[in-house]
Amino acid sequence: MTRLLYLPDDATVIQLEIDLSPAELVAAVNAGLRPLPILRSAPAGRLSATKVNATVIVAPVRQPGRPRRAAERTDLTRRQRQVLELSSRGFTSAEIAGMLDLSRRAVNYHLSQVRKRIRGELPALPASDPNDPTDLL
Image (cartoon, rainbow, N blue to C red; front, side):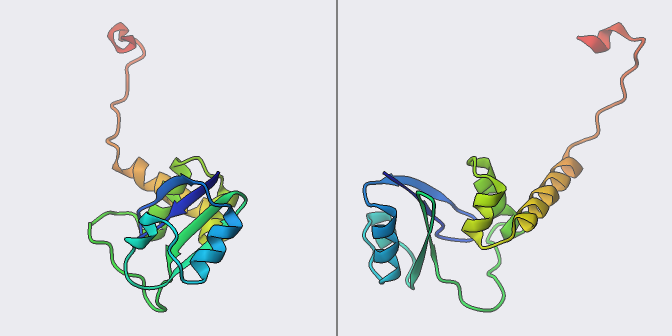
């Protein structure tokens, strides 16, 4: 079984288990074929595949220039959303770095920026009074 991570757009990650070997899938996608139904419904354009251990990452080839803007308004950048999504799926910083062609230091930086933004959005908790026994409940 091969784990397939399909990145159809800037923030979505689709994870599947498939019966093709990683080498077969990478070769087929990079040759211009779309061997799976989910890849056939991909946006028009070329797909590229990269193998990381037993995981194959498939994504549309990006045009040079500025990245597309997200349709929804969030405070996270496109790259922060990608790193957060992969991290939440249990991948290590080194694996994410390989998948997104970043350094491990850049991945850790993006994760720290996400944490800072999350902490900034949480309301401050009121200071508790150590002499008030109802605060312990």
